[in-house]
Amino acid sequence: MRLPVQRRDRRQKLMIGTAGWAIPRAQSALFSDEGSHLHRYAQVLPCAEINSSFYREHAFATYRKWAMLTPATFRFSVKLPSLITHELRLRRAREPLRKFLGDLMGLGRKLGPLLIQLPPSLEFSSRMATTFFGVLRDEFDGAAVCEPRHESWFGARSEAVLIRHRIGRVATDPTRIEQARIPGGWMGRSGSMAYYRLHGSPRKYWSSYERSGLEAWADEIANLPRSIKVWCIFDNTASGAALGNALELRELLAST
Image 1: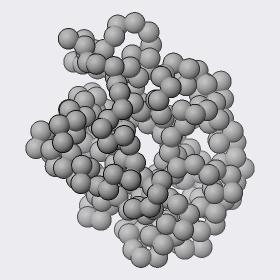
Image 2: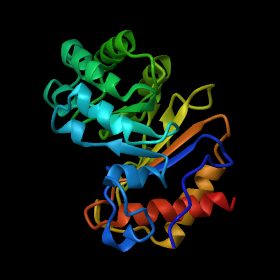
Image 3: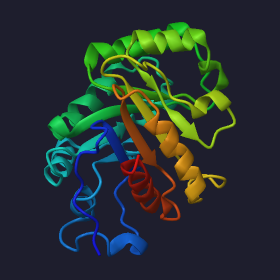
């Protein structure tokens, strides 16, 4: 039996999806057998995270093609290129950021939040963060979330910089930094966002979440203020577990 076509959740602001839009064989019978993987995926789930943009440039026409393959309510989050976050380490990034954003306009209304994943070695610097997020806001007024991975980013000064620039802080699992498991930054304000990236635990990118773990995530998400838009992306794609986990979490939240 195929899953029903995706529709707006009762929460109205809940987006559950996966990194990419692969459909593993274990779930393929639940999807239409017509069209591309993206077209089939987008009939059931409301969003996807584009990770490939971190590794290579995509043309405006490629983003436009992806947008055309999805329903009107579908949204993509898009990861910033490694050139900006890992090579330039957020410094002197205006021109590559402007080029990236220009290509992204191919998504049109389908563009969701930008994902800014930082290298684990990048320590918080108020001057560096303020300058980069200021440049970002000069060029882009839409939703953006940051996934820092150095413990220095989890303090009052960094939170203040994120809030000032309307940047959410990603909640991630697994992590050795306890506070990183909880969304932060620009939260509890009109138009703000809680963004979860669940990579699989205990084996990152590979492990499937057990039912009890998904129930815990569902409880946490259900208890967030309803004014906050929630994205939950499963990135445990190496074993094909992401799609099954996303569908199961959706089922759990539909019953809350």
